[in-house]
Image (cartoon, rainbow, N blue to C red; front, side, top):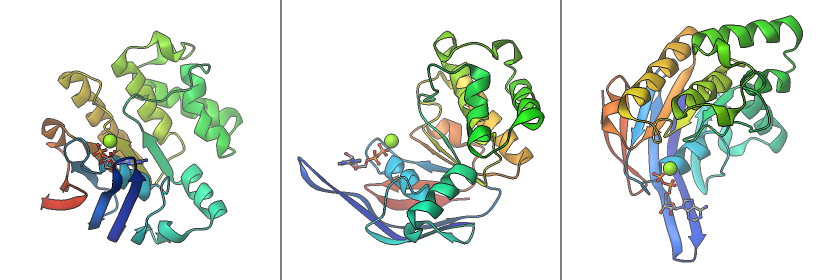
Length: 224
Ligand SMILES: Nc1ncnc2c1ncn2[C@@H]1O[C@H](COP(=O)(O)OP(=O)(O)O)[C@@H](O)[C@H]1O
Ligand SMILES: [Mg+2]
């Protein structure tokens, strides 16, 4: 279970103070595939970054499977991020100088998963994303949809509890985007992972539950 209560985050910018997250309380049960939907600037990225501890919060609490993310010490936070968290970005953010297989294997290496177990897990994930033939390819040789498939495989390789996906389909056409969402759902279910996906595209939230609306840094509706 991920629980946010009265989370607030402001930024100081050239335009003065921006209330990116005004006062957000929400909860997502373990094993869910949740979506946060809102227009550009509504605070989706900030909210996901706060949930993953990539940004600090000004006020409020974020408890993720019993861990108080908002007040973990730096070493505990990086352990959480390395072993319990997976992140899928809008444009994949694969490392350009590593092959597809090496990108997928990176979180395994960081978690001390090596040798045969690592090799077998990479092979299984390449099969899951139907890209066995691209194991040795470099990211620039992939299409947008293939990049995101690799990005999902990398995010889930170390079997995180929580997968955060920030507009993972925004640079894809609708059909390819829906395939990525399905892939995240399938892999999440297989590994018992909770998924929270931010998007501005209502179409791809059809299979998500709950769907949480965000506007001007506030939850505007929660649908079941
Ligand atoms: N690092 C930052 N510095 C200043 N303002 C920021 C920063 N990050 C986000 N913001 C502002 O916070 C608001 C929410 O942004 P963001 O979370 O990126 O929304 P979304 O992901 O929904 O587009 C926007 O007004 C944005 O300009
Ligand atoms: Mg964003």
